[in-house]
Image (cartoon, rainbow, N blue to C red; front, side, top):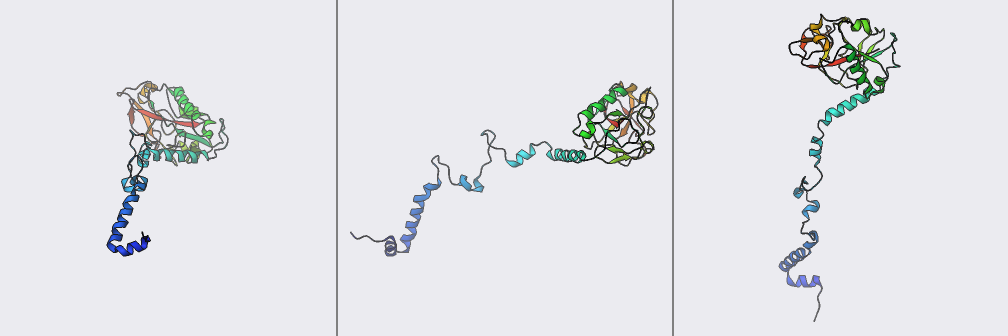
Length: 265
């Protein structure tokens, strides 16, 4: 029997047979792209056939879903950036009651009910916030609250510094105590103990001069009441003009919660 080369055979059979044989050969070799479990080659690289892993199957969460599950990662990133920037600010040594010193001030990140208990209790709120701060420059300092009650006021109990008053992010509030009590701030007192920006009302019971507002009826029963029928003096943490940072000109219901301003001593 005479053997022919494949090329010679194809030549002898003609073009139509060549196409048919080629198709048959392709079909015979297609099993290479099919796995033993019956899965097809589309799963190996076909983007159009890709299937997102299901939670039931324990697959990885697709990138879009993972990012949505962050719960406001953009805000967190912004706050982390603010803290990092604040951590590089050099405030110098703690003032330790010295008047000629640049002082750090902040508004507490947390809000408290009007029944916080008085000036001494407000001082403790400031101390606790400072000790829990992410900023070493804040943790190293002593703070008292900008708060009034029947027996004491900021004007009588806080050190009246001749140096600058600075936010925890380094921005100036006022050039000195004398400028501070004139009522207009260079920047709003809205940076918290970590250098993050907050907004909202702050309990003060205090006028721009550092003196007490009226009587107990303007201080939520001297900071013992959360009644919606009693009122207290508040400042706006985003205000700079007309002393509104410490008293907006209107009393707030004692049923709300507010921040507390804290001044280095």
